Length: 226
Ligand code: URA
Image 1 (cartoon, helix red, strand yellow):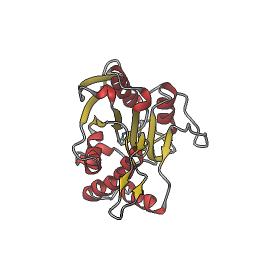
Image 2 (tube, rainbow, N blue to C red):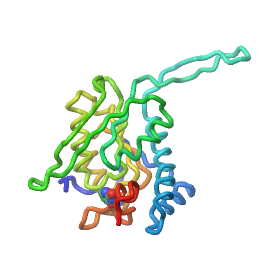
Image 3 (cartoon, protein in one colour):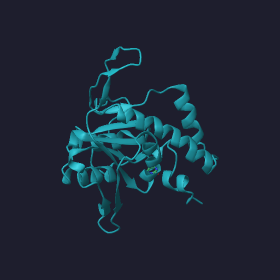
């Protein structure tokens, strides 16, 4: 577990935290994936819909620059375009579930991968594998992991990006659900990293699962649950 001071559910969150508007549609989608009897097909499909919303919200946080165009009827449209290069980085295994939604909205986007697991002896997160675009330092990075629970893996993954020269403020961490503990872990250590999520759960249980939560995301998504 990280040593961050947990934020209470009533806490005021930093403005680097972006919670999707809690609409009825979003709540209905959450209802479908949280249901323990949901089929894997439904879990994959409806979590994919929420992830798509999260990716769109993450793209909104990128810098834009003025880009005017001429319309077919001879007027100037005072437009905008993305002002930076981006890439995705998924944290294996669960983060891989978010790659399709990113590809669907950003064709030919580069997507790196990081595998971090807790060392059985030291209990500390250990980096087993990373494959990242060589020019990642000049990019904005959408870091993908659907579960931000204790924050241990997220902190280690962010550090990998910083070690590669990515600016802290250029990292957008996109996660399906989180808890005050995970938010505190990330925002206290890396206050310029932006966080995008669709739900803040009540708390972690003694097994570090989020409550009410959705259970083990990777197992349910990839069909490795019993
Ligand atoms: N990882 C999961 O898959 N679920 C949780 O609740 C916490 C971590």
